[in-house]
Image (cartoon, rainbow, N blue to C red; front, side, top):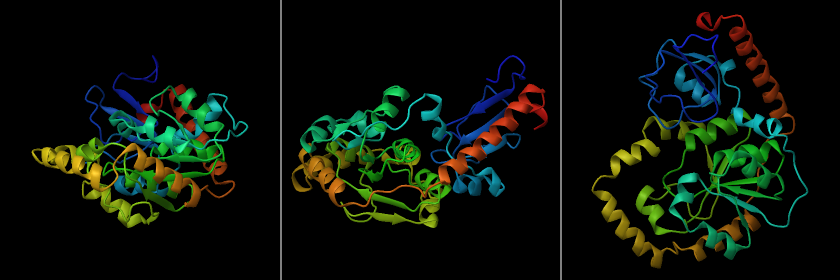
Length: 304
């Protein structure tokens, strides 16, 4: 994956929560700005080289030196695509997690709320371009917050189901010296609850500040997407029935989500990392990238 000068046994992991996934086709992986979050790390190969990881929690899990924790490489995307902050439109934007988006109900919820919906599965230039003109970004997608923060657009983190990656959210917010505040919001479809369960995170429509130990335990106990899939089993049918009942009792409808999003926009405190932090992290990331490029150019990747 590095090109013809690289031994075929070498692979590369970049942006994403990819550490721990099996890649049997390579014997050694070079990790650059990726993170831990979805997969167990017991099978991580000891010969892997970590040029940098997304944040301090990933470094902690992998027992890496603190200087390996830099930031998510997604911060480079707007610059690489030539997209800067545009004149703000009147409408705040909503960025669901991609799995939430697949379940449905978001088009209706955002139309009712008067907000613009961004499908996170669109090409990066479309997603980033839409975020660039927003006055406010309400996001269930981590990269929605990352891009907003790079462009200095205030953002609010929310979650609708138990499919909440607290670990990777905290990993990034800690890297930019920002507390993680996240607001539980009811999803627009009861199917989301049937698939992923409830967030079990504070009270609906009230911001919760998540600490490092809570985020770390969330990963170590296996409360993440991968483990929840394994644990659903026969209980999924029962949860589906409860979710449909919840449509009447809990307001799990597009209308309910629209009201929650309006409340979020009007009363939740938006966040931004402190001035200068992203630029500092970007400089460190680019320095590490130059080290990687130099090793590749001289054929020293195998010795890295």
